[in-house]
Length: 197
Image 1: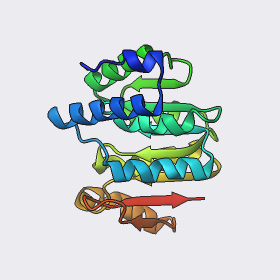
Image 2: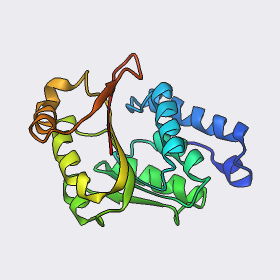
Image 3: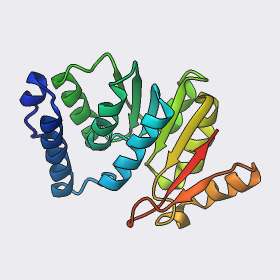
């Protein structure tokens, strides 16, 4: 990604964070990367803060925009973030950015199919899982993720109204297993599903 991160290395202040996030947002728009909206970001960051999340799994890396927003909140506690993406381009961009801001010890990126990688993760490890990738497989992501969660946890699944026709199996799975959820109108573009225990 052609984004200058030097000022972040020197001093990642609130002003610099805003400039960096704006550069990521602009880059995403210019390159038609479907990043989550600012409204959605604010909602997720508030959830991270309220839930005191320490270990988070994100299924889909994109161009790092959502992740850097999560990091700003997660850095306040001892935390870990794992992100899985099937796109080599996204993966390489994220790796470059992480090295630039010296975060190799707190962020792990996996380049592969999340359906293959989630089962390999340690059970009872995550407080928060954000699913925003391959809507047709959202049911599979959810089912595979459940054993990986701690006693108290949050799962957010994005775009559940706009892409509902692609997510039929997810809705059926929730009904068949009596899993309670809320669908929230966080963003005018689409709603998110929240499952909490």
